[in-house]
Image 1 (cartoon, rainbow over the protein chains, first blue to last red):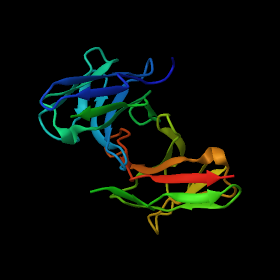
Image 2 (cartoon, helix red, strand yellow):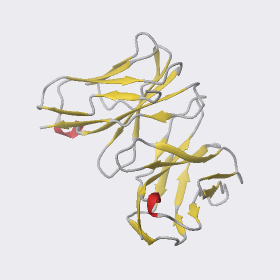
Image 3 (cartoon, each protein chain N blue to C red):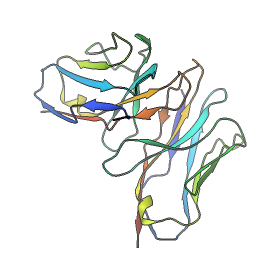
Image 4 (cartoon, each protein chain N blue to C red):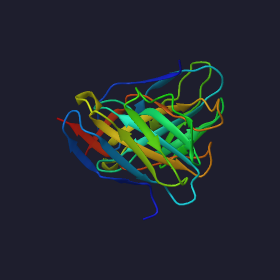
Length: 113
Length: 114
């Protein structure tokens, strides 16, 4: 498809486990963003990539969260030692350039039990 | 820091009613302002935007005007349809770093009944 693709769509994991969430941006988009949306809230910024590099990771809540984009396309958000408070919908967005319109994926719903 | 406040929902209207969803913001500098919509089972979609004071964004019958003097960006539609039922998010982008880092409000759920 032509849109931003996120996998899996749903992930249930046990407290303390490690998870990886994948984002396939729109082809050719250089900018990629991760957001987290808790129930009843708006999305909150986590990290921004321009190409392969994380240009702004100021929204990552702590060092259990890490994201990579090794080839400047697909990105993976990694969460270590998951906690119940990490349960949320994780959204990925991409844009053609840094200040152009962001297109969002449908998100990955993470549930930590 | 920068923030967005929007009216709490849910907002329940009959078809063809007039819609207003209030949004105010706090920001240093001159942010760009956005309304995003999330239809059931779908991802966030950009509905409209305005990049400077007094700009009016419009799309699909929705409008919002960037009011710097009142730091507001209220969403309006003259006649809503059942298909407009969704969650609406007001957002700003400081663009201070030259990239589109979005700060969202909490969202307002709109339900339109026939």
